Structures are given as structure tokens and as C-alpha cells.
Image 1 (cartoon, rainbow, N blue to C red):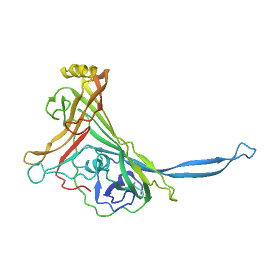
Image 2 (image 1 turned 180 degrees about the horizontal axis):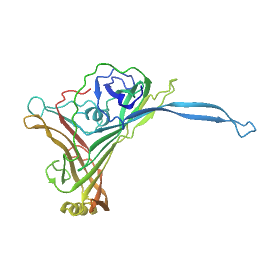
Image 3 (image 1 turned 180 degrees about the vertical axis):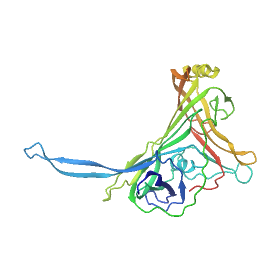
Image 4 (image 1 turned 90 degrees about the horizontal axis):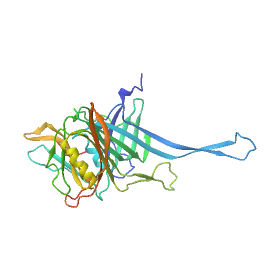
Length: 330
């Protein structure tokens, strides 16, 4: 029968004007169970002085609130559009060497986020979701599990529509949790200088744009704009307690000493010669929490919370790089 979840799929396109939908240009490979959208309108029942308890005599609905959640395994190739819509728009890749490799570097700044149209066939019917931006982007994983990315999406409008047909299919590439390395250096140093082995067990990095929907008196149900706020970045890293590094970082937490953390994912799938696919997340900041009560596989673990701090030497408070073979987005 129609409506089965396995029939669902997603496609995206870059909008010229936020909220004005465009035909999709790229098929996306997002999780079939963890990805969906909703269009809500707040009910407004009206009670009147009628002399009775059953006094609701009218009801209206407020303007539309369009939102969604996307879940996808971490990928150097598949993450580009989410970073353009959630970290910085207008980024183009450099060529680090060879012919095919491309390095995409995302650093938050004053550049606007890229608005996108998301086409969603939900298994039963198609939808166009216009003016889509990433509100929250979360990276999670563990050494013995998956490395995942979740995105909370704000949209400006959503309507039934027929998805763009005949977009090119491809074989996506993804990164496993074990393909992860941890580097910790002095604040304002060079990211990825000092690798820490036998220490990191699991991780979580959450980026928030603090998006807000703006509504204007234009006789329309739809949001008129999406407003972006200051960025917030928090990370949580679980360390093996017996490691030398855990004692070092406990002292750094106690002294509020700033650090420079790099999470490095991938580096196993070859693009060309010595160039491989990877994602790195660079986080300058200071430990703002140190939990001593954790356990993992019957050993003691410590959970460290990191608050980002802008690094004037490296000129970022957050840097995400993705190396792949994609010369263009969308």
C-alpha cells in the first residue's frame, strides 16, 4: 500500500530569496526513521460569557510553524549542505593538492547562512519546505558505535508539492565511530599538533544558532523571515579516568586554563594518492564542567564539558573542515 516509510526521500536546492522555493538539485541520504518535518498552527479557542460552563463558541488557528529534524551518519561528502545552511553560507572549496580533492572550511562569521528548499516525499505525498536553515547541529559518537549528525531545521513555509524528478542517485560515503582521533593543544596553538591516544571514549558537540521566526502583517500564515542569533558551541568528551591526560585536564579545568581541541574523523577512504576524506572539528575553549562519576565497561570515566572561546590567533571560535571530492554544493 502507499504511505510506507521506505518510500520516503529528501532532496534540496539552494534558494536565491529565502522562502521562495526552488526545484531541488541534489538527492540527500538522510535517515528514514530519524528525519521528518511538521507544519503546526497553534489552536486558539475563545471562551465567552454565556452563563454556562461549555462556553467555547469559536476557535481559530495561528500562523504556521514549520520545523524538522534530520539525522544522518557523519560523512565528509554528505555534510556540506547542512554546514552551508547552519555554519556559513557561500563557502567554496579549495584544492589542497592533486586534481580531485576539495577542502571545505566553515568558520562562523557575519556571512549569512544559505537558505534551502527541502523537498520531502513522506511515503504518502510530496512536500516543499521553503526558507530552511539549520538551528541546531549536533555531532555525537563513540569509539565502539556510530558517528552521527543531527540537525534541527527551521522553515518559513511548507506546502504539498510534487518533488523534482530524475535527480542523480549516488553511493554515499560515511564515517564510523572508530575512525576518530583526539588532539588537544594549548589555546592559540596549531590545531591537530598533539594527538591523545587511549583516552577518548565518546563525544558530543552541539552548535546552536538561536534562530527565531519573524511574522509580519502581510495577510499570510507563513513566517516572513528567520533571524539568526549569536552562535553557541558546547562539547562533552568522555575520557578514560586512568589516562594521564585526564589528570592533566582536571588541573586545566581547576585553573580555567584555555585549551584547543580537535576531533578528527575519517582519513581512511582515499580520494587521490595521499589525500583522504575526513571531517575535523576544531574547538578552542575552556573546560566548564568535570564530572568524576562516570563508568564505561566497568572502568571509571570522567566527562569534560567544553565552552567555546574565540581564538584571536587562529581567528575562529569554531572551525569545521570537510575534505572530499565535491567541487560544488547543491
